[in-house]
Length: 145
Image 1 (tube, rainbow, N blue to C red):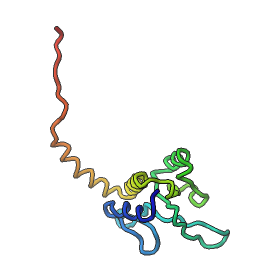
Image 2: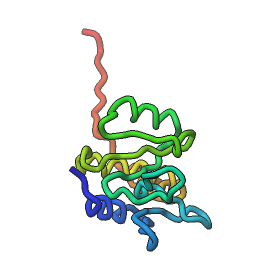
Image 3: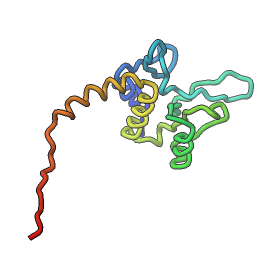
Image 4: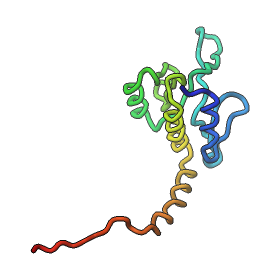
C-alpha cells in the first residue's frame, strides 16, 4: 500500500520535481512553466459546493486518453475517473491499492510526460557511455564442413 509519504519521497526523488506549497501536488519546470504530474484529488462532496482534498486518492498525469483508458480497463480497483477529468489525460489512483513500486513507476512515467527537456538531457548523458561500451556478444563465422 502506498501512502502520501511514499508519494512525496518518490516524486521528490525525480530530477527537478518540486512540491506545491499550497496543496499536496508535484510539478516539474518545463521551459518557463511548472507542469503538474501528480496532485491530490479534489472531490466534490456536494453539488455546487467547493471540492475538498481526498488524501487517499491521487490524480496522476498520463500520456494521452488512450493510455488513460488502458489503465482504467486493466485495473479498475486501482484507477478510476470522474466527469471532471473527461477528456483530460489523468487518472485517479487509489493509494491503498497501489504498491510502492507501482506508484514509483507511475510517478516516473508522469514526470517524463511533463519534463521532456529533462528526460532528453538525461538520455543524452547516457548515450555517450553506451556508445563507448564494447559489444558483449561474440561473433563467430561458421563454415560448412
